[in-house]
Image 1 (spheres, one colour):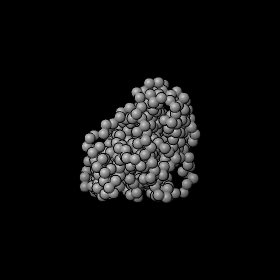
Image 2 (tube, helix red, strand yellow):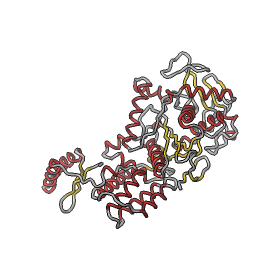
Image 3 (cartoon, rainbow, N blue to C red):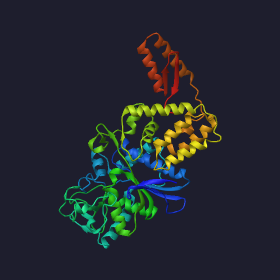
Image 4 (cartoon, helix red, strand yellow):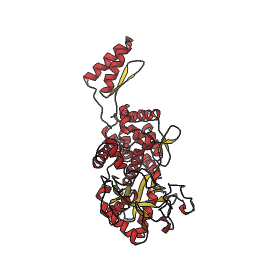
Length: 460
């Protein structure tokens, strides 16, 4: 039985889908004003593992991931610039061009990490009508009020506001969480609709019953989740930074409007940290992109493998040495399975252990241990192959592309390797290094040994 940790209840719960054999899943997507960094991408890998485990349990998954292309301000206090407009100014492009470019870059990263695509990736700008309709309901029910800069949600009208974060905001002092805006009824009231500044025309703005402007950040997810999945739906995911603000506010406005829960299970992935346990973030310019890892010679799937080694609810300390260890492990796995026979009957005992691990709140580190124990076992390679391919429907390491496929080393590569060996034995290190670089640029790695050398194809 599949059990998942529910942030809302602070415990593991057996998954009981609203509809038999089908799970509705909403995952918060990117704000497309810049490239995703590897910390962002950890969340999407965690959500991909969740989706794969659901499917591994024989469940169909209806997966929606939003694209935030308007309304996400630079401050959690609903102040500052819209990130899309800021990105447009930074690059001298339109906000629409910025959104298109970074959405494409994000989708490219997902493909490189072998992340299964969502069924739909709706954009906030395509659902302005739905967002306005939701705000109208909140206004009619007395949960929305007007200030000089927009329409706000009145959190004081909701008795259990903050339940996801297990915080009682009514007991907090003003300014403890956000900057003080004297027009707000409560400091943590949040924007539903922001007015365009007087005398300035934004690139992204729309007419509304309250004035020309644009939606707040949180309203898009409530509107689009309901439009595509209904309310309630089964699972809502995101990073842990969404707990206290974004997801707390989604719950507030959705439940206030429709008097029913937004989602039954809330799941959150931890951060990637660097240095002194510092969260990777664009705001402090300490982030790495997947492209940077690739330029340093690492496979995107090596980064995926690195992520699999830490439970999604634990912080992951990133280092290039840890990434190199993941690359080495992945290469070793690929090298081993190339010589396997065609899959036949699997290894039931290991498959049972693997499923037990993944069904225990996605314990992928334990599942990887099961995989490596299978690799070391005495089972014939055709049995290992059958089980490994089954495991890889969850792990997503691309084993089907490698298993049983002995690669042929081209004559040109063999000639380069032989020339390098000759230079190495002659202690012509400059020539040796030059030839090694030519091999690596061609996608091959050479490993020296006391007697000869070995050629490996990199990043299969």
